[in-house]
Length: 87
Image (cartoon, rainbow, N blue to C red; front, top):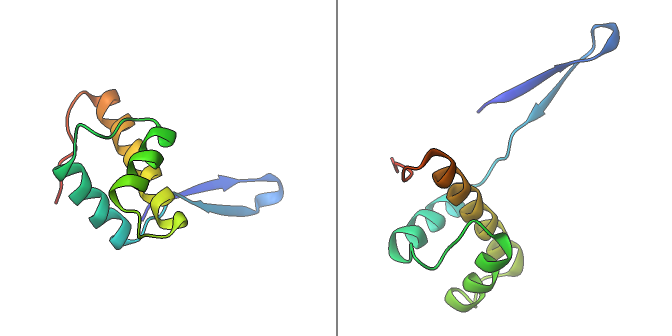
């Protein structure tokens, strides 16, 4: 995992962690993007509505987490102009 180190006054170091998603969230996101690539966008709000239709049985927190991760991946794809390579 990457950690950003922030050096503050008087030599005190504070470590702030990046965004961490569970493997279940990442796996589900990957499957959804492979199955429905045209439905998702880099907008969290739009992805949230699509997720409510595709996976209505999941809880709100999980749907929102997946929606946010999809939006983040889509933003990276548009920034890099290439699709994400899955492991």
